[in-house]
Amino acid sequence: MTQTRCIVCDKKITYQFTLCRGCEDEYGKRVADWPPWLAYLAREQWKEKKRRKRNPDRELPFSDFPENFIDSLSHIDDKDKDRF
Ligand SMILES: [Zn+2]
Image 1 (cartoon, rainbow, N blue to C red):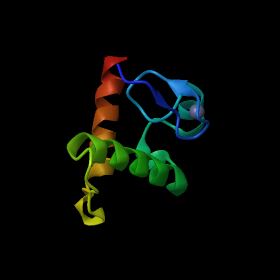
Image 2 (tube, helix red, strand yellow):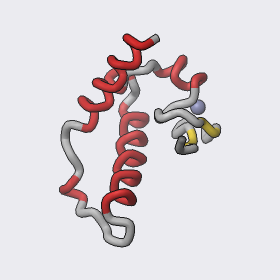
Image 3 (cartoon, rainbow, N blue to C red):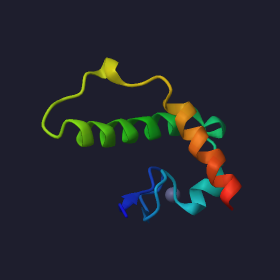
Image 4 (spheres, rainbow, N blue to C red):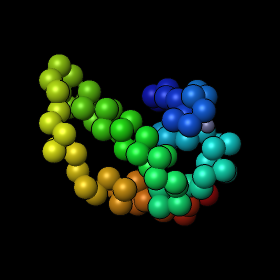
């Protein structure tokens, strides 16, 4: 399991999401509910992860960033909701 940090408060989190539980309670689980600055941070983090995975030693062109990022996150979110 990958260890990551909450993009809001920098708390260590071990599950595969962007926010810790506290921040999730405050801002909501769905990207659509997040304030723009938070959605931006999530996007940047996701972009960085993807860039490292795909091209460890090459810069990813900015234009390569997929527009459906928010939608895909929301999709994961919905699945999680059903599970709990
Ligand atoms: Zn947090």
